[in-house]
Amino acid sequence: MNILVLCTGNSARSILLEALLNDLSDGRVTAYSAGSDPAGAVHPYSLKLLEEQGYETAHLRSKSWDEFAAEDAPEMEAVITVCGSAAGETCPIWPGAPVRAHWGVEDPAAAPEDDWPGAFGTAYARLKHRAEALLAQPIETLDAAELRALLTRIGQTG
Image (cartoon, rainbow, N blue to C red; front, top):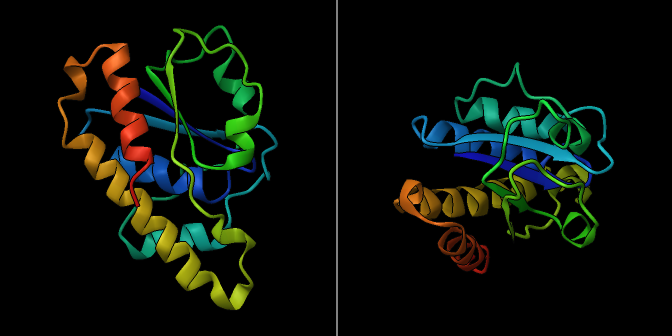
């Protein structure tokens, strides 16, 4: 299952969820992330946190959602927004007409630098909880309506 995670800047929350889904899914999910107005670089504390948790980060980059609307882009089964701005934007037409859901999380990058450890830790924990909830389900057997309902329900959890 291909999942695209969207946030406006694609430097923190979407990067964290991309890494979590790819790592925790044991190959069941291929996650990508992108932004409507990408920052151009992954937030340094996102990289620091992921490296501390044992993730490989060399492949992570901030990129535009336009890459995933291109004709040769991988077909997505789901698109998950993690910030309110991206959730409210008019998205491109994604190949495959994936289901959409919103998993809003406060932007840790908006916190003062002294608060980054706590802010990024909270975002990471919330996204990990949601990723684990998704991966605990038989997602390979769900139809689009069932997947949308599951993603929506998970997005409403803490």
